[in-house]
Structures are given as C-alpha cells and as structure tokens.
Image 1 (tube, rainbow, N blue to C red):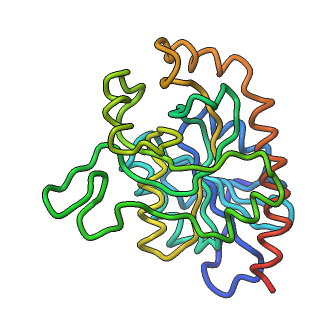
Image 2 (cartoon, rainbow, N blue to C red):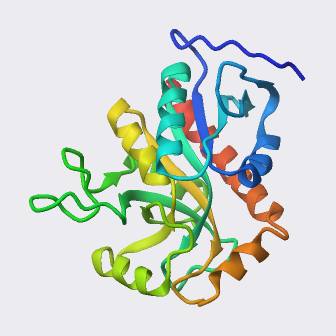
Amino acid sequence: MATNANLSATNHEEFRLLILAAMPKEYGLIMPWLEQPHALASFTTTAYVGNIGAAECLIVMTGIGKVNAAVRAYQAQLQFQPDLILNIGVCGALRTDLSIATPVLSSAFTYHDVWCGEGNQFGQVQGCPPIYEVEPKILSTFARVAPSLQQGLFCCGDFFMPSQLYIAQLLKHFPEAMTVDMESTAIAQVAYMTRTPCASLRIISDTPITHFDHAKQYSEFWDAPEGAFMHLHDVLKDFLAHYANHEQQ
C-alpha cells in the first residue's frame, strides 16, 4: 500500500466524495470500502483516498465532537474540493419505530445544545439557518435506490449518552427529531459555508427514547457491527451509481 497520495483540488474530472467518520471503530469498518486506498500524509489525522465504484473518495477520521468534525471537514473540503460530503457512523434513536442496526439518512440537521438568545431559534447559531436542509436530489436518489431507508432530522451536540431528562427536553424543542449524534450538524454547517452538498448516513447503535440503559445497548452494538456497515456500503454504492453519474453529465 502506498503511503502518500497527491490530490489536485482543481480541474478534477471524477466525481469526488468526502466521507467523514468520527471514531476509529467507524473508520475501521468504512476503510475496506475503498478500492486501491492510499494514505494522505498531508492530513493531520488519519485519511485515505481511493475509489468507491466510479467515485474518487477521501475518507477522513475527524475525532469525536463538533469542533473536531468542523475542523476536519473544512480542511478536507479545501484540499479535496468534493462534489458531495457524507458523514457516516452511528447514532442514537429519538423515534420509537427505530431499532438497533437500522440505517438512517438525514433530511435536515440542527443543534440540540445551541441557544444564542432572543431573536434566534433554539439550535440556531446566530447568522446561520436554524435548520440545515439536505439537497432534495440527494434524498430522492437515496429513496430510489433504498426505499426502506428512513429519513429525518438529525440533532447534534456535545453530549455522549444524554440522560432521559435531557432527551425529553430535546424533544420539546424538536418533536420531529429522528436521531442524536455529536458531529453531523457541525459538518453540515461547514458544508453550508462552503456551498457543498452534504448528508449523513448513520446506523442506530442505541435507543435512548425507549431504553433506559442505552449505554449497554451501545456497547453491545459493537460486538457485531459488520453486517450493518456492509449494508450501508451496498446502499452507498447504489446511490453513487445514480447520483454521481447524473452530476457528471
């Protein structure tokens, strides 16, 4: 395996996909998706470039939390200039109809731990949208290739395993919320600032809305996550075959 890969940020002909994953566990399950991977030594975190089908792909491990996610997303966007950003990983369910290992897709993003005072909506960073909407073409393409894939609002904040009381308060602000995680909206905010299409494709690892000991659920999910991640890979390849080809026309 090569230890270096050079990227030209301009005049690229291939469709470029940037995948951002927070944790080594997630990253390690996504890395085998790459064909002919090469380490990108110019990054200050683990990053590999290769192909997924016809798409040139850069996979970056961001680290956990909003700041790590935003910094890595911006660095990768500047260097790689992707046509699409996908945040991939695991999340907690905020709907009772979602079970462990279910794949989910963001239709929109917001923060559950941001309040900038009067004149702003809860979750809104002042001067930015309160909700970051996913491009309709992304949603419709995923719906075409994976009709059973659940779509909904992703809520993001710097809380690992929020308490039942906190979840109840979150749902008062966002009754339509589908999932909770620690990176997705920060990545969506960077994508909004750089005008890059963005979505998050995640797997339910725990169900805090229905299960009091969701920390135990989360731990047990990692005993056998391979099948769920391989299903995501198959969905993503089908999506790219449709979306990437359309973008290049």
